Length: 375
Image (cartoon, rainbow, N blue to C red):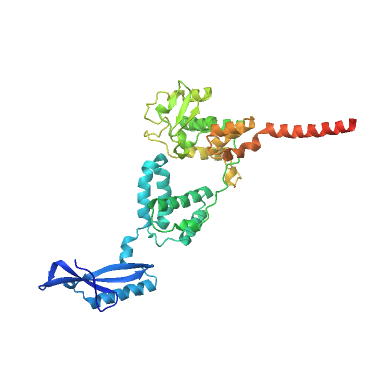
């Protein structure tokens, strides 16, 4: 192709072809130039052999400038700018090999909450306004503050993963850490009643619940245990599907060892707890909610923090440790908390240090008072 040569029409150029011919003459292509979004753009309009000429190219250029002036999209931008669902597809493909549980949680969250609202929007159309509407919509559905936060965080992750040259609109939304930490835990008697009721319905689910209560393991950590993760020789459970993708170990007490004895012969690559079809369990059994409702444990409770859920078993494990006077550092290690601030929420349950401090203060005061009187 030859060099671009200005025509008499503003912003219109022509180029002669090195190979194309039309009516015995060298074919000529017409290009236009204009500024859009602060950048100079070049656009090929067409060839003489296709019926174009410099005047027609000038008309096309005028149409582009009109579109820019009125904030309308340009034809080539419509093709180039991806839809949010395209970004999500790439992210979820990556998450399948780099995220916990092969990205199942991210996939479900996207399909259920983000795709219906944002999937068919081009990324240049999505603004903070749309994300605020999304947030309000999720809250109106009655989703927990934690779930709303996870959805907005997923949007941020999808956008950032694409590494596109646009400011992430999530920056306009303030994502607060929800105050949804569980406050209520089971009493010894309550836990016993719960486990007995669950055992009448499902022995396997009873074992899952009891294991959580005795070790503080999360549901997905328990359902991720395979035969090879049980080391009866050294009384160890290898937690390979731990939170934050960091493998860990949990020590078996005598009771835990007795509980898991029946699963000792599970093949190394099979899950010790599984569905009837032999697959991994991905959701907490409905049995838990049904039994909790039948026993009336959540009757009249409206604050989510005070409702008993499966996660309350893990919370109970830590609370019982605190009540028996264990140090916070010990509880942190057994709960596998990264940060001690996560464990501090149990400090109010530790009775010994508070009583000891108050007692010592009182004794020091009165001993000082007595000494002053004697002098």
